[in-house]
Image (cartoon, rainbow, N blue to C red; front, top):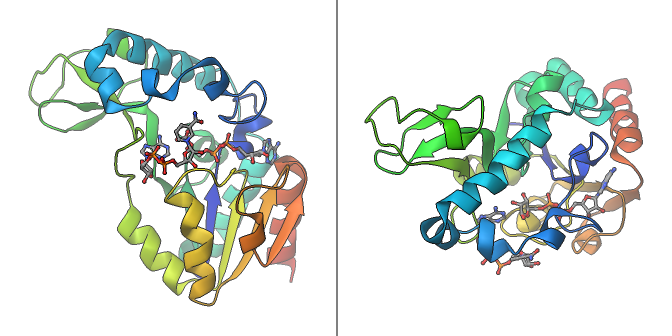
Length: 230
Ligand code: NAD
Ligand code: APR
């Protein structure tokens, strides 16, 4: 079991140029969640939903990981299985920085899943131009992201790790969305020390044993140095 669990949110990718959801200028300012990020929206108007995620997909492809992603990759290289990196982000910036074992609890923008057989496949370009499902031939693929009202991935593994870990760290998340917002409570109830690294106070700041405010590109490398240095 990992001794350290790290949870990341949109804030860690903000300085790479990926907009967050709830900050000023965030994604949910220009879009209604109900129109683009629910199963009902996809059923009603799949083209609009696909266009929304194809735009996200292109935006992510055009940016690069930042020093916060790099520091976490370095941490994994040193700690191996003692670290579990859980992300709410659907971008692949952790992987591009060198992290290997990343649990994408809200799915991955670079993948699609088949509405007929459930297969999950890599889709390099726009979903709108994707070929049919390679397994069953179904034409309609959906973005492999977890929408509101759906169950996130990896929850059993994450829960077991939260119960067992000695330290839980949340980076760049507003704590507005469950179940990720409750991870700090589980970890601390089972005895872990808890640390928040975020630009501003979040909805869950009071639940952490320590909270540091600042930019992820500054705070994360500093904290990783502390962990590895002593
Ligand atoms: P909800 O009804 O929106 O979601 C219920 C479940 O959906 C949760 O268990 C969650 O894990 C899951 N889920 C599915 N897809 C998700 C995704 N893409 N991102 C995050 N979670 C996803 O949940 P709720 O309890 O009504 O709302 C949780 C929080 O989400 C609220 O505190 C609210 O601030 C926020 N929220 C914000 C907006 C918005 O920004 N416009 C819209 C809906 C919810
Ligand atoms: N460094 C550190 N933190 C930052 C930075 C930065 N440079 N920029 C922004 N932040 C912080 C903000 O202060 C905010 O608290 O990151 C947080 C981003 O919060 P949200 O936009 O709500 O993103 P997140 O918590 O990841 O959203 C959770 O909601 O809509 C769903 O599925 C979506 O995974 C997402 C989930």
